Image (cartoon, rainbow, N blue to C red; front, side, top):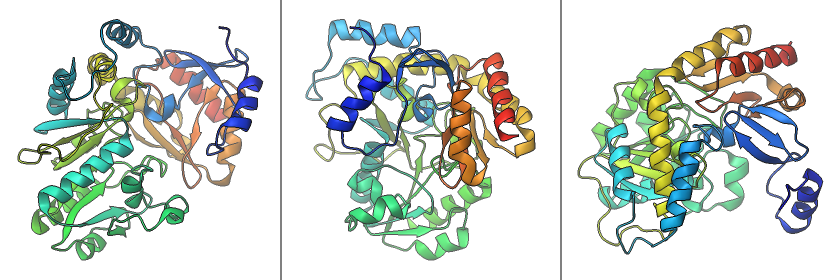
Length: 378
């Protein structure tokens, strides 16, 4: 089979696929930090599947792990012990500092699992989340996702929740009461455009949760697995959450998510489940991915600083390889200009340009990206 052209893909998409996405470009091949479109044009990819392809595209170790496993067993369901599942759970527990893990197929599902776990173990019903936070688009995860444009058409979502301004501890204290099951928060708000609050914010959340008996749920779907230069974004603080959710970078693009929780916080028999979650292929891909990230983790912060220095005049918000620049209404235009010059970047919310390149991106590639951005931002 030859590669499909962009026009062929577009024609099929327009006729047969529900128009939930805005897109005008096809990506047909990837290797390392580079991707190619349907016409063979090459780009440095600073979107990386939205912080997913952390090991770069088609990393040989990940490809080999998936292929080897596909020859052995593709699926067997959770009625049986699943190859590599225990190994990945052990690794997730070690890197998060939690006690046990459970797998899902996505970040949204990991959020759903965390909300269920918080409710069933506390016996409480309500949640507190933050403005501009994003936790997924399933009925459960959408209930705690703030953006009115994507949430309100689907209300009521069957979840009692209060939204508090991100960073507002006084507001949080007022919102949390004796029936609050959990407070869900991102260490850095990704979809909002890489918004980094002061560390004291998390210490404050921990304190409020400890006083009320609510669980602190930290959504590490975008910030986790090395993206910020540590295994978890919350590890830049001294705070220990009760539940952590993971996805995106966990298996180099193979659909997978996870939640991990502290001791005495776990699902009991039949309280949660999933046909595909933590299947043999996902776990093989994840195990290889975590092995690669472990090796490159020490370089992430240094690469982030290279971006920070190169883009200094735009006051970028940088933690590891998670970079946000506020540019306002011209964001879509800048995104387009960068693509024309062979660099893929992404507009998150509120006119914020977001860069979340593979953690394997080279210094030379960083310098090219910086040069293109400096040229287009003027």
